[in-house]
Amino acid sequence: MVDQDAFSYALAYFEGRLERHEYERSTYATNLKHMRAWKKALGERKIGEIDEEDIRRVIADWFKDGRDSTTVDKRITAFKEVYRRAVKEGLAESNPFDDIRRPKKGWKELNGVNDSSQREEIAGVLENLPLDEYKVAFNLAYWTGMRRGEICALRWNDVDLEEGVIWVRHSIGTDDMGNYLKLPKSDRPRDIAMPGYLHSLLLQWKRKNGSGFVIGGDDFINPDYLTHAFTHLSRFMGWKGNAGRSLTLHDLRHTVATTLISEGADVKTVQSVLGHSSAAVTLDMYASADRDAKKRAAALLDRAAKRRPVRKGRIARTGRAAAL
Image 1: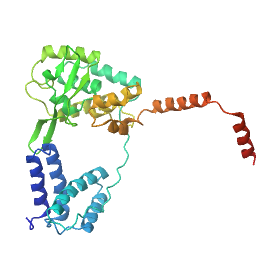
Image 2: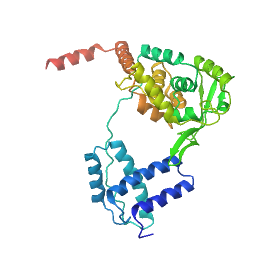
Image 3: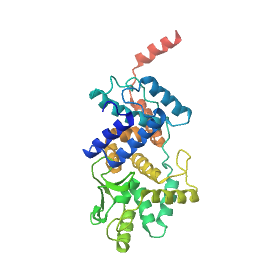
Image 4: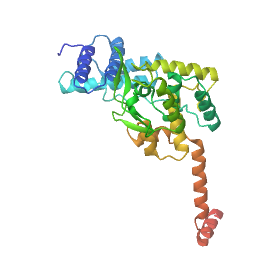
């Protein structure tokens, strides 16, 4: 074990966590990808031979090569986890990542659609598409904010048309073996109430394709197919989000979130609809996304200031102080 190179040790560590069901297969595959990047940069070095200077050199090289901070941060996180275990097992005297500061992530504006007229245009186009699995998938994304993997994993027994509720119980993961069914991102099922148009669309679609998966029938389809199809439609229509980028399928999720917030939905409800792990995640992502909400907040402060009584003595003292 002591003579193992760092990559072999990491592989065994990640495989162990996968076998103990501590990892999703997709997480395992992602961590292996990160470790391959480290192996390419460091070679087959022993787990106890790599020091902080080596780590800093590799990180600097990655940034010189144009790697973004998010990718570098994920690579650091994966390898640091491996070293925590190595230190506990006595294979390394210390963790070379202990004094490595995580790179600052560049801020990227969410690309949802706040403009109500543009939202109406998108809804109209999606409503008038020919009835097929892509129309149903795009409308699910537009009206519920479901992730693409959740849409592809949706079965008809997850859709309660009588009550008008969708249960999100599964998603699609990806690893080196391909796509597979897994729990949703938060590991908890959630329910979403269907808006009227979506309810009628699903009723219509069930009469045509009413068994198995809502999208795909007997088997789920690759989520990439939905992404590529929507990208083609979006570019053809010239749709752009708030950040000026071409609208993507995932941007419909951001659109649902900002629409709910701007219409007065409370944060806990938005968290539940989107399936975030906590309300703090929802607040962190969307609290500043609604520009109109900021204007309304300023107006509220203005009205509160006008209602507040001010004593004349305080005005007089303030005036004398200003004169001095």
